[in-house]
Amino acid sequence: MGLFKKQLAKRLTNLFLQQILQQFNEGSVDADDCAHHHPISRAHLYRLRPRFLKEHASFVAKLSGGDHWPDWPPKALAFLKEFLPLHKPPNFQLVADELETRLGFKRHRASVAAFARAHFPNLICQPEPRPKARRRWERSRINELWQHDSSIHQWWPAAEKQTLLLTVDDHSRKFLGAVFVPTDTTWNHFEHFRRLFLQHRLPLVVYTDGLSLFGHDSMADDRDPCSEFQRAFSALGVPHLVAPCPQAKGKIERRFGTLQKRLVAILAYEKVSHYAAAQIVLDREIQRQNATVCRTTSLSPNAAWEKALAEKRAATRPSPPATLLDLHLALHLKRRVNADHQIDFLGQSWHIAPTKLAAITLIHHPLRQFWVVTQPPGPPLTTGPKSSENTHSEICPLLNSRRNLLLNSRRQPFTPPQAAARPACSGWLVFRLQRSADRPMAGGAATSARPTTMRCPTSLSSSMTTIATGSCPARASRGRCGG
Image (cartoon, rainbow, N blue to C red; front, side):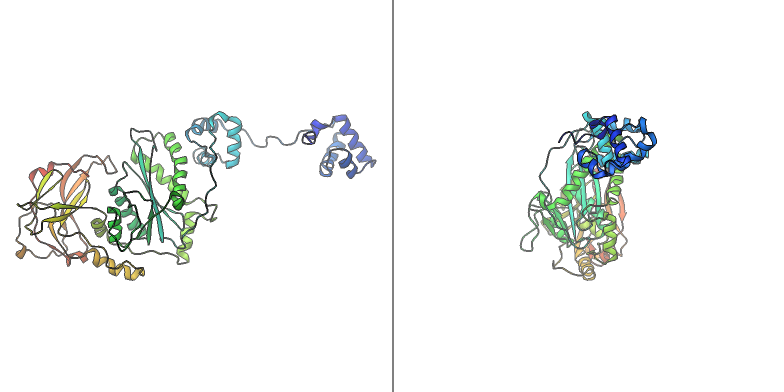
């Protein structure tokens, strides 16, 4: 059988092949006899006959195939030599995308893979075999479920690993938000979700793993929240579900695998060394992924999102105002009130208005500002499914339940409670801790204290009563804020 696998030019001599074609042309043998007695198919015999009649004595069988494409440009070869060793296992679709983006040299993924294996076999690290992926399901509406997770990885060369926060819509598979942060903390997740809520509004459910930061178990009506994360999302009326295993949230796990295969190589090629430049590359890759057609749905995430909107398959709920998000997406801390009406926080003593309470609640935005209130904002009274119109009317008053503001961290003359007028929505004077401009993310940056005015929504002017404003210590303006 090995003889029949060789090409005709290697199986038969030129003289013997000329004799067969001469007999076929004279009619001594027909095509079926040639196919039966000689290893020449009917189609190939008729393809050889015109060239034999034209060339006759000089007829020579040629090898099939050949190089029909021009040689690859030297810039593409240099790019492959530098780019292929940067990602393990190899991602030839990424190589094809980068060749087209950077050099305008378009080739199919299979062609790039064949060329790289033929010319640069030593630069390719073959992946290990993996088990077959499980079949998974999806929600029927956009914003019905958001999958969220973080990945601590060496995204670019640095002394410490970086963390990528990622949120994906379960139905459309659209990347809703992605950001690099120095550490995997609750506050960084709160900042990430605050941007998403203002841009895409509230989802019905948020789906994460059982990390202690999120909460080890799903939210339920008969028990307290397991974490600050669940406390904030319970107050916003967004249930939190915990995946029982990594395979149960495969959509976002596969997205992390895709980004690790692509971003690590791109960031190394771009020689990125700081967060601002890395975020630019990340945003560009997220836009490309949202425009890439998914093999499962035959639609890009952007197209699936627009199709669901056109068919009115959206489970979107209104988002509270940004000021109300600041109250809930914050760190809530308990502090004991000293006998001289002071609280200890950030290594300092802060004067507050006289109160009979033994403990107060401190709402803290690390490296920015904080408030002191008598009671923390309460969660909604009902957690059952509601329509988007009813949800907005129920959430807003509950987010602004009556509570007395004791300290807003701005030095002002003390006004007795009975003489204090109700604020007419003129704004809160809060103690804002400014971050260093060269550090885009929270964590370890030097800060300076500066009082500023923060506007409050109209709904707060009738529900929040200012008792008094305590005077801040003089050293507060020179302090640093920890988180």
